[in-house]
Image 1 (cartoon, helix red, strand yellow):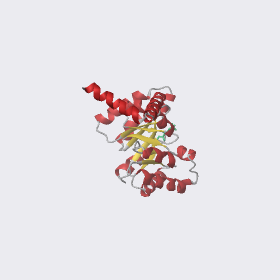
Image 2 (cartoon, protein in one colour):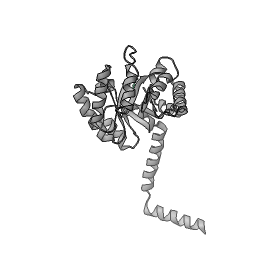
Image 3 (cartoon, rainbow, N blue to C red):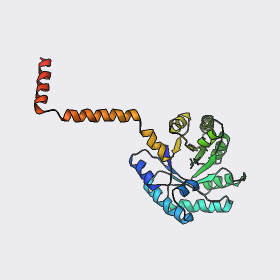
Image 4 (tube, helix red, strand yellow):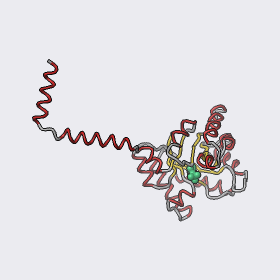
Length: 244
Ligand code: E4P
């Protein structure tokens, strides 16, 4: 799995898809707003259907836009009708710590066969409970954890240990990337997946010393092409002599 892209932008998704380095897409209401999706659920649906088709069979996470229990259930069940590869994002609890969310998550996974990505989590203990409730993905907001002054690496390690030890199906998505180095750092700490913003993917690929090296190769290849037929003949002759 390894790399998901944290974006609702079709052009960005297509670009990295063509390179063969994407295994999924995550979005949230903030990302979709930033990417210009402003027409309510109708526009979310149009965009989601397009992305889901593009990346099929890789998963696309779409987040519910309400925290009312019945409405979350209804939205989640509607989202998965849009495409087979849609995963529904539900936050671990509501804006004031409302606890119904875990009931919703459990019912969606176990009763309605909906894949859930439990999101906005800041600790291993939250991830563990979401995984116990049956979540397919647990999203740990590593960048935000670090921003609060805690070390997300410890939370990733603890989450992975618990998931493995209790044989839970959940996969850890390390989210909220803040720097290029987060990707390898978080994957090697035990995350199954890092969801990364597009600009950091560019940054992971490009290296100044690689640029310099490629320039040297191309310049030397051009020089080699400038050799005359006589140069090549004399080289061949020298080679022949050296073998005798
Ligand atoms: C993950 O699924 C979220 O969409 C995302 O990574 C949140 O990142 P942020 O903390 O930059 O908002």
